[in-house]
Every structure is written in C-alpha cells, then in structure tokens.
Image (tube, rainbow, N blue to C red; front, side, top):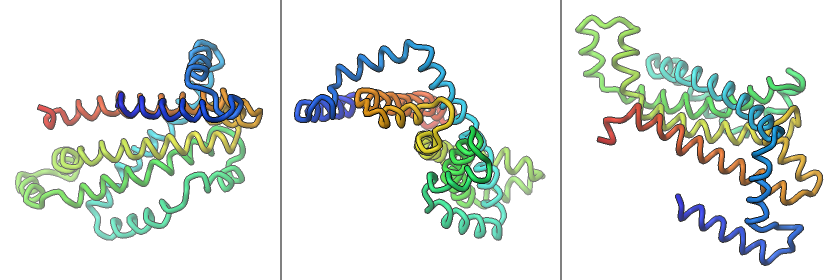
Length: 242
C-alpha cells in the first residue's frame, strides 16, 4: 500500500513539474489545501452529507442484496429470474439512472440514495446467491434430518457458508456505491457533498480545489475499504487468519 501511494504521488508530482501550475498543481500545494479544508466547519458539513447518503444507500443495498441473494439461492425459479434481471440491469451505468430518478423523485437526497443502493445491490445479491448455490447438499440434508426449520437452515447452514462471499461482495458493493455517490452528487448538484464540492471546483477552474477533492475522495475510500471493511472481514472470518 505504501509503495502504491508513493508511486501515485511521484507520477503526480512529475506531471506537475511538466505542466503549468494552473493546470496541474504540485503535491505539497494540494496537501496544504486538504489540511486547511479538513479543519473547517464547511468540510465537516460536506463530509457529513456524503457519508449520510452513502450509509443509507449502502445499508439498503446490503439488506436487500442479502435477502434476495438467499432467496435466489434457495428457490430455483426465483434464482433464474433474479440472475437475468441482474445481468440486464447491471450493464447500465448507475449514473444513467439519475435523469429518470430526478424526474420521478425531484431534487434532493432520495434520488442520490436510490442510485447508490441500485449500484451496490447487484454485486451484493450476486455474491450471496452464488455462494448459496455452492452450499453442500450433505449439510442441508443433515440439518433437515436433525429437525431444522427454515429459519434454522438460513441461520445455521446458509449464512455461515455464504459469509466469506458475502464479505467480498460487500467490499465490491462499496466500490460501486462510492463511485455512484460521487457521480450522482456531481450531476445532481444538490446539498453539500464531496461530489458537489468537486464539481464546483471544476466549474470555477480551481485546479487546486479539484485535486484536493480528488485526493480526499481517494483517501476516504481507501480508509473505509482497507481499514473499516477489512477490519470487519478479519473479525467475522477470524478463523481464516489463525
């Protein structure tokens, strides 16, 4: 990770040395801007806006993704229908839904949250469904012989079996959700958020602000994925790290 970060910053600084300062500001100048911004109340409001939308949209995506994925793994007909729906709809970029949701729901947080949930739903549902299909039938048969009811089957057989795939799917879903959040905020331009801040910096030709926002977005995504989600993964799947 440290080598990757160093390489990115090095190529960035090399580009800054090559191009005029108003086109590509250097790394120290942008880091100074980021440090200044994070100490302001405006930045905290921007961060709170984006994190709130992400939390709601991503949470709904995981909830419905796990539910539909388990149902698709257990019910053959529903599985085929759900797979076909996912294949058709996940090929559409999440940002393409924004004009439709704006017309249906108007400006506000709701269309952004729906775009986030839709983008994250597909990998979550698909990973759970594929993992449920791979559950050994001997385990299912043994649980039924011991008198397990449908809820016991889900809780004691299917959920433990799909947990590794579920965690991986959740990380993939986060990547989709994060990109959808930034894109939707940039396009809709409602309220305060990282995407809106980036779009405004571009509109005003503030290249230091553009690069500072891009750097902030990259840092936050890395921290959430590699620190928060990875820590959850290690706790839930701690038997794999013994």
